[in-house]
Image 1 (cartoon, rainbow, N blue to C red):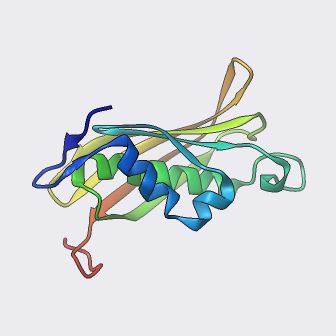
Image 2: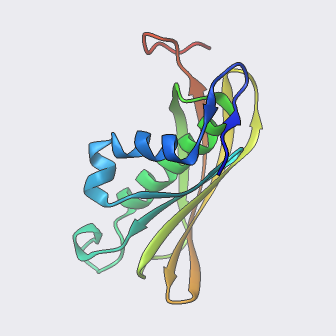
Length: 151
């Protein structure tokens, strides 16, 4: 993928975005992978394994929330640039998540120079079947050089 330019920001490539993800120890612990990173869109994948499930054998809700949070932040960062944080997120669990691969597909709904509102669909794949298990929405904010909110 070629890089794209965020407003007043540097070009951001899929490789750069993957390096940012790799720098997050928790993402490594979960085995997360950035499958797509394009202008206004990001897809984060987490392989389902027993260590990530709850007592009934379903993927733990915290793993779904993590995936939504990170996918939303990467989608927002694709239009705002790399210095972003999650400003807030809501998630609705629709059905239990069971399968082989969790995919969090986030898109930018609207963006200004300082924030982006994104939505995310979380699906679990089992073979060639995909099941929507949760939906989320979040706000991504641009932060200043010292980490303070620029808004």
